[in-house]
Every structure is written in C-alpha cells, then in structure tokens.
Image: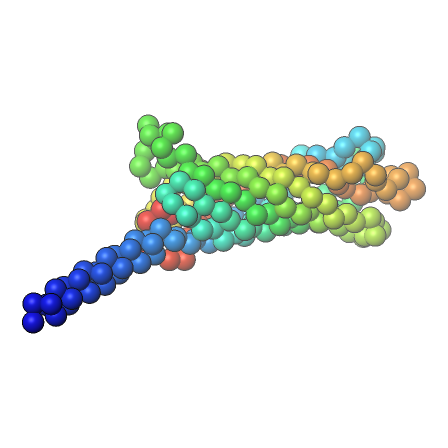
Length: 210
C-alpha cells in the first residue's frame, strides 16, 4: 500500500511539473501580427543619371508576423511594398519596389528603463530579397537582388494585446554594379530605400510581451 501511495505521489508530482513546464513554454511562445502604412524615399545611385524620384513617396505598406522566443529576443518575417514616382525635374516614371525579409528582433526595454511602461523600443535587422519593377515604358527594366534591412520600432501599448507603433527602416541594396543603360533603356532601380510607417501590432496568442 505504501509503495503504491509513493508511486502515485511521484506520478502526480511528475505530471504537475510537466504541465507547469508546458504552460511556461507556451507563455514564452508569443506571436503577433503587424501592419503599417507610410512613406518612402528610394536612393538612386550615380548610374541613374537624369531619373530622380520624389523625396517623399506614398505608399509604403508593411505586413509581418513576429515570434518572441523570450522577453527580449525574437524573429519576424515581413513583406514590404513601396511605390514611388518621378519628381518634376525628371522624365516621368513609376516604380514598384517589393521586399521580403527575415529579421532578428530585440527589445531594448532593459537598456531603456527610464522609458514609460507603455512605450517600447524594438530593434530589428536581417537579410532579404528586393524586387524592383518600373511601370509603363520601362517595365522590362526589373531587378531581383539581395538586401540587408535595419530599423527601429517605437511602440505605444494600448493594452496587453494591441500597440500602436512607428517603424523607421533602411534597406541596403546588395546588388551588383551592372545596370541598364539609362540613355538607351530608360529608368531602372537597384538602390537603397528608406521608409517610415505607422501601424498596429496585435497579439496572435496570449502575448504579454506585445
């Protein structure tokens, strides 16, 4: 009888510890979605002589899914679409610029303890692909090339599950120097891009780190 009692107690304790560990693990596996809209500025290189975009172009649309491994460290997959147009001193053109990036995410809460509790600053960076496609007469002058993105997000927590945020990012082009001849072929783009967007971050699970 005593042996059976000890066995049952040990089994119950084991189940309790296992359940607690599984619950703790689920609490750290936090997911959230992000959507934001803003403006962008493509940075043409010297090979785009004569073709210049506006300094502020609309829209920039960013969509992302983020997973936090802990309170500080996470990763996200995000998609960005950007449209830009020529300025008044340039031949007319329009550009669609799309990127896909896999990024590391790091919360700066421990470094910025003086910030109010509702405000959170998050750094993000990672590699990706850029897809540049001019429209109209220059639609054949498209590029696909690697990029490296780095940026900062500034969140204001509305609740445990929802925050409003601003994202400022720089997308560095990792493309070769070869380029369409602007005199013969017209406009093309394989440069860098700066964007700023405003949006909402929302929990996809019971996220206490959102």
